Length: 323
Image 1: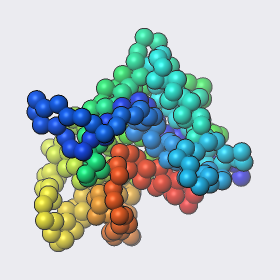
Image 2: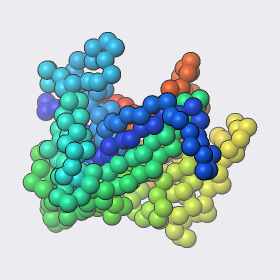
Image 3: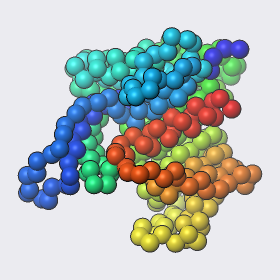
């Protein structure tokens, strides 16, 4: 039986991370605790999470980095995206390869800078604030995906037969152009390839409702649920009311989560997963076959929430691919 492949199509950024005891006030200069750089971008994060969790051998104890396993992986992880022709891009490519991700689908765009995310982490809470400069990520267009390695994306619409080499799952986010996301969803639907869409960051423009038709997995947080609902076309039901932000009421939260799931199921989504931060995760399957709430595991201290959602998406993608 061939090894299944998860194809992650999305962003690659260099993270510039500053850790600080607290956030500075407007006009204030504050000494930070530390500064570091790292490989990031929602696409890159999710691909690396998939690779680490699908490796055929565990990482060594105490190691913070995972290198490509010597034995064949349980799942092949392929990254499709774009970087600039700069030092940041080369570092990202090497980081993907060290973690066992197939980076042959990552294009180097001449004259463009690699995407950059400036991240400020507040040490007291572990919460972060992020400023994103997309750079080469916005060069990931439908035209750029017409590659021999991505034949399943470029086959003519008239050709319906299944092709060898189709991925078992495609993972998408919204740090690349929305037109590209729509294109990939449509092509995957015609080829019978399941898609996991993580609509993050919350879109600033209206998401076409036909994106949801036949979508296998939708993973989003409360902010994204409200943003997507408020931008549904007038032909859809009225937007969702937001849940209470302070002193959460269990009944109000349950009603909100049920309404979110029902809304997206009605648009054609099979599995809806709503992440709730420290409270946990709500899940629902189309037709009410299965739904419920899974509380989050408690930890002594939150060090940094950066990429927590991406790690969850990677774990979910590996789990559904493994069956």
